Length: 240
Image (cartoon, rainbow, N blue to C red):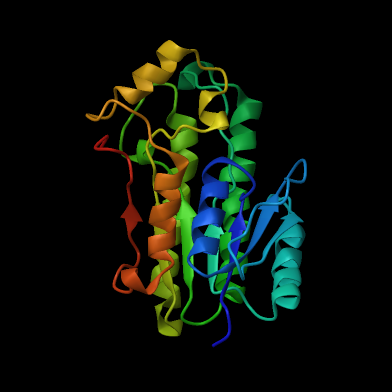
């Protein structure tokens, strides 16, 4: 049987790196993308290949090119595409929100996700899976986070429509919407009191671990989730 390939956009650190690790462990060869500095080589389970590609998801040509490279380098179309790449910016009330920061959110989190998902729809193998990362904040209103949450809500709309469009090819499309997760990006600009406030949003009084999100994505990429399609799965420790 030909080995399956997964393409993880935004797979160099944090949740993305945990997704890469989980998929490689489960038998995928994994292509991952990064946008700034090239990541150090990731340890791969025996028999697995992990390869990194530089991609600017805001540029549709850059996204289209990586699908071609992955297909050539790994000997076929990816069976799983994960749209994890995205950004956040400092929160703030909508009335005082920085216009340029909002444009940044839109360009990366909406336009970038659109580019990834459009490429995935055209290039993922029949019978494959497409998984988009969003946020539980779409359903848990928090002051200062409206602009960020709105960009992720847009991604969820794209995912749900895609499922209706691609079901005829046997492709399953789902979203994963974590609550607060302990990554470098999450901790950036936060003191310990802020981290604890986020932990207190869950009845378990902690934030998530990236590996916990990686396991959910790996499950959705597997045949164990064969009857899950068009859903937004929320690993958030009871936040919502």
